[in-house]
Length: 395
Image (cartoon, rainbow, N blue to C red; front, side):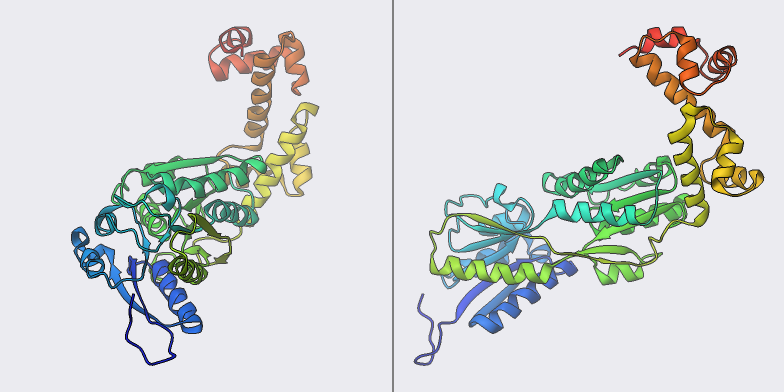
């Protein structure tokens, strides 16, 4: 392409940038692009907000004159961006997770992809929430889109490595938030919830408020992108993870420069792994009362088979029996004695299901001192005998 310039001056590259400028992350990417260009060459940007570009009219017009040297674009396979890029085979850098799977219609030339490391983002979120204390449950909310699943995968994998499970809520669309309140109410408390983005996280905060759920007392909420406007104006202010979007913009500039010099370079993907935590009021370390109960529950799980009783749990906690029961009822919704019975019966069911031990030996192995008492309690609690339960639930 011939650009008019002074003799000896570098050629000015005409570059189209397609982003959603209402997203702070996209504005940071644009900053990274311009920052890289200031230090490495002369580019003239045409910036298009794809949310305002109905049917890709602006993008098609920009590309139609044959004066564009390259494009950096988000959401290349969807909506107005896909329509605007249809059939254009010039140097292209796509932004976003999994963009290589969504080439614009008619695209035959290779292109580059720059994306955040979504598995890393999910794992950092899990580590951060776990650092706050022991939660009774963990949740992850995301929109129904294949490229969004990677953050959940990283979150769930890191929790699984810690022996914990993540409950997933998939929202079918941007406005599909009616299920958030019931989902939050159904999570055992205290709960820790990560959202795929700040946009979803602020809806979770609103749903919690409508449902009378305390944040962060009952539910800690974590977003992604650190959109300061959303995070600082939400109630309470939202803790968020910040992928390095500025660096994504810098790398996008590097990749586009390479593609403009070598248009036939093979397709490739570059991933940005840096993630920072910006802590605000939607998360905080768990209250001492919760920590006390979690310590008691851990003691019960680890010692229930030895026949420990309420007095043993209380002595281990170093508080009075009345305070221990008060805290257990506040946090776990049960007394210390009920927690012991629940743990013992969970162990009884496991042995009934997985072994051929006689019932009398099963209950004694689970810490009951009287087999008859244990069998009577089991039938009262579950409406059936241990032998009948075993017959119906063998693995």
